[in-house]
Length: 90
Image (cartoon, rainbow, N blue to C red; front, top):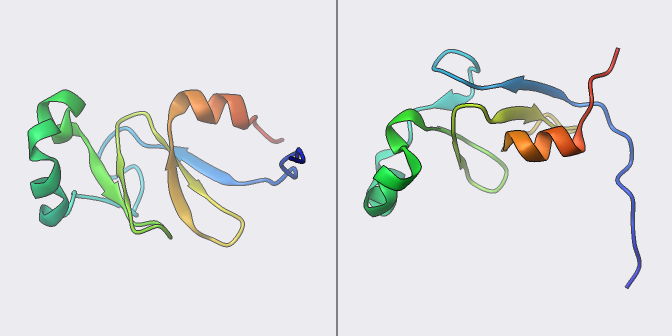
């Protein structure tokens, strides 16, 4: 098995904390809420939202970073992973 290093790529990112922080973060679709209602209290679903991605969509929690990738795609990233993966660019 070969090892690879991620190419240095500059991305745009915004940390999402509340409604209005990012135009692509919306209410969780009802169809998704129905499938996760049994877990809702465990993950604080009332504070979470939704973002459409190339993979279909993801739940966004307060504090998650919304990254715009190299092809303009949007996706969420947990704060601890973001801190390990990205650093500010001047």
